[in-house]
Length: 99
Image (cartoon, rainbow, N blue to C red):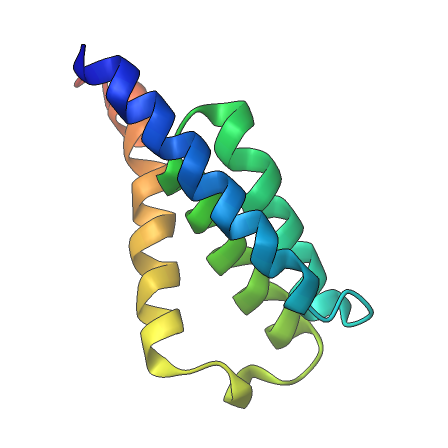
């Protein structure tokens, strides 16, 4: 029963998130690409974490590539570091033979 409830809640939350997509400046690629990655990767990977992580990392990378690294706040830099570690843990453990 809990899985059915969680699935229904995620559908409601997803529809609420998509209502806010109209407020995204889709002409600004430094915003549109991270939003797109976040929205697309959540359902395809079945994890909210992966979608949010991809959006945060891509936002920081794009802003830095545009020479606008100062526009990225300290919180976003910290989140990016945490998410990079999140993505790197499994490959590193596999490489070391830990898992």
